[in-house]
Image 1 (cartoon, rainbow, N blue to C red):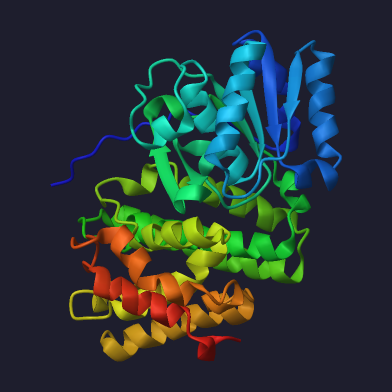
Image 2: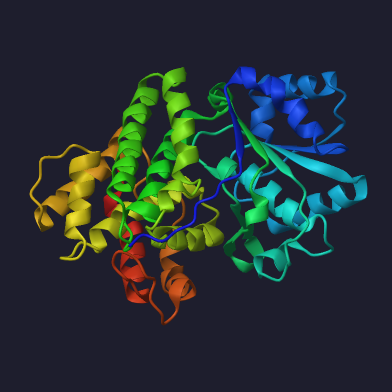
Length: 395
């Protein structure tokens, strides 16, 4: 029997004309607004000034905070939280990709306390009063605009740690496909792949019994990611493709697909560890790891699911056996490494990763198992990471 609870309180405004509602939404909370944004969005776009002008025209008082980097750092969260306390900020407006939105959520969690981001990541903060967050995503892959979690890096500890709480859902999100034009196409294509990874790991390749409706929705979403990512490869400014991908990304991680499936993000756990050590962009790290993991787990208990992925998502005519599963993995690699032109090995990022594989594997699961569609232990992670570092797999 299916047992689950679904709740998502985020109010979504989709489309550029909906920005007229931004001042009204913000004024519900009164007081000063801290605007968080990435340097690249302001540097490469006139949209930032357009948003600020909309707020100024309605007498919304704003303070700007820029310079939030990819894989946002805990010390940056602490610095911004202190600014919020000092300036009596009443709302956070996050304009950017997942890093900016995740940073805003972490600030939201601690700004009304005297706690630090480290306390938050150590699960030592009692989250009761938070600063409201409104998001304007400028990338089309993160999904952070419709969920209540995030990731923060602590470089000195070589760690990348997740956090989440039901009070950290954005109050509203304004999704404007045109705003994603500012992102470099290679990062856009990596983001498209990341949408697929979110669905694969969080809901598709899981042990939980799934409703047929959920399975088919996941497959439909992934097929459309592939379809529209190939459109963007040829026509980067295609609005229809970007609009569809923006909306798919939101639904990939807003909780709807998780109904009854269970979440077992093994590849994400591996990628968090690797990028905690080597500061690799998340979607690029996942592109290296996921196909190696999928090949590694091929066995009698996973063949049906992997072959269904190949036939229903990629349209392959394959037998339901180990050969069909291998054919699926190979086609998936063709999509990632040839069509999307993503890196297939960690040696493209660093030559040192192989020296820390055993250490990272121990940090990820120690002597325990990571549970998933097929459970894996440290020796499995070591095998997967070694394949991820093989220079012979470079393209």
